[in-house]
Image (cartoon, one colour):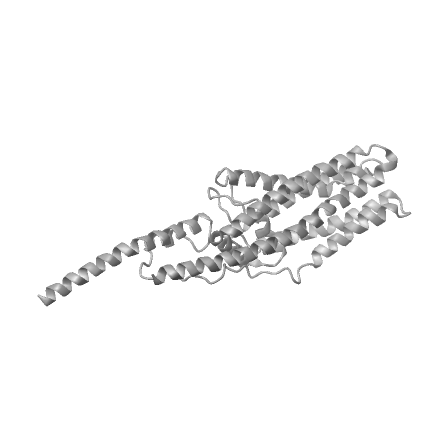
Length: 336
């Protein structure tokens, strides 16, 4: 009788464990499905078919998944571009040199540096042992920012060529490159945000987001590509950003708001600059129109960047606080 009672007790205990482990199985397979849909290189079809380990629960992380990235030591390129632009828009237009000479010097200086950066980042993504390639993509894909960077430069080159056709260069067209870039990236990011809000899947690969997967805010691929390639964050940053976005709802909300803020701001700034540049029809104001075309985007971008820094710091503190509260609740639930 004792032996039969023990066997019956063991069977009941096993059944209870099996019922208790069903949610763990479902949760683990759901997380695998999400990572597979997001294009994680580690999530393959074989891993998806592999049975989930039901006897081990995932550990609760005490802090949100870290990005392991900082801007320290990566600001020299930004400072150099700002210096060239300041020299171009505020000083050189009033130099005693001829307008053609001044504009040729400035266009070569800024355009040459930008084209060199374009080719350099293309090589970083294309080379065989690239350490910044898009997750789950091949060499020829490059990344989302690279293709739109090329498209923007095609339009800028057309503007410059048309501007230098007459004997006297057209300063209004030469004042349009920054507005063109803002309009392109602002419109593309806003379009992605609208599709994301409507829950429409990705119509094509957008950096690490494969075709058919759930879209993310328009600012997400820009942050991923620029920090991974131009900011030397490597592919590891792409993975860290993916983990952080998937794990933290505060982080997702923050990026969604920042996406709308920068996309709408970029389009508004581009339209305002174009209206002012071409609205100053008097030939005596053409130098002012040229200066406005190069200065106004920075007047908008400076305060916007400062407001973004303050907002991000506040949201990261909020994320850390809510994450700690959630960890405490999970620990209490497990103990109970």
